[in-house]
Image (cartoon, rainbow, N blue to C red; front, side, top):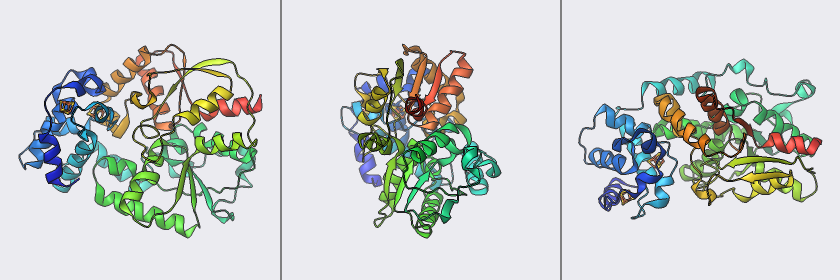
Length: 377
Ligand code: SF4
Ligand code: SF4
């Protein structure tokens, strides 16, 4: 969206404030600056080249970019896109991102990951029986299983188990010995110039390794590789899929056989696999698989498109952890089950953080945990 279009959209706001009802950052702070309507007013100042305060700048950076407000806006304003464009403008004017973002971005540059993981431990998720036989890039395959920072370092079973499932199903794929970061964090923080450089370098890595198909485990990686990269590069033609979509097909073809676990769980739809994923969304595939695992699914919302954000979107935990913890607490209070499942390792990691901070006795798992358990039953 160009600046004139952004201002035109902002001007069309009728101040009905309906968007406040769905915005978790407003609900937990009761601060209008941290609402969609309030953030549009900050964006209006910014795109009219007026100064904004530090408090207003932080309000833009505590938006999870969950896009729930976009769904309810009475004027169909692309609110989350305007908030992201505001961050891009602030970075271009050298007024942002914040120190916490710069610290993480430096980590991406120096260590190739956004979670301060030790690069030497990147492959610590690899199952022992494959350590000696895994040949990484040397394998002749045009399909790459890509894990991303969260699966590699923080929710390691979301790397180990997808890898094991594909091996058990005799699926042809390879992995990289030294994975880069997808760049989604840098893009969300508004540093488009650096994001563009990371995207170009990653495309080169894929080309050099003959990759035509990319399978990802993380919602952020899916959103980046299948949606954002396509907008940046017209000739980008990688076939990108989430691991759940691949396992869904494997089950249909009889390569993955599931047995009943007989449990009740709640399933959470990550924003970047759901309402934000223009090439998707992946709503029915995870549910069908979980049902085939014999799981009774409790829902968080009537329509999966309206599923609340985990509370950590767009790196807000580093900007204001109390917002993230309180969003999570409200979400956990809605749960009817002790077991909580997501298809994104960032959501799982955040749910574990929220559980620890609020001492709520909720067990959060990555979806493939149940699939492997069901396969091995
Ligand atoms: S994108 Fe989400 S957090 Fe940001 S203003 Fe909209 S509803 Fe609130
Ligand atoms: S719902 Fe849309 S029109 Fe109404 S206040 Fe929010 S941004 Fe403005």
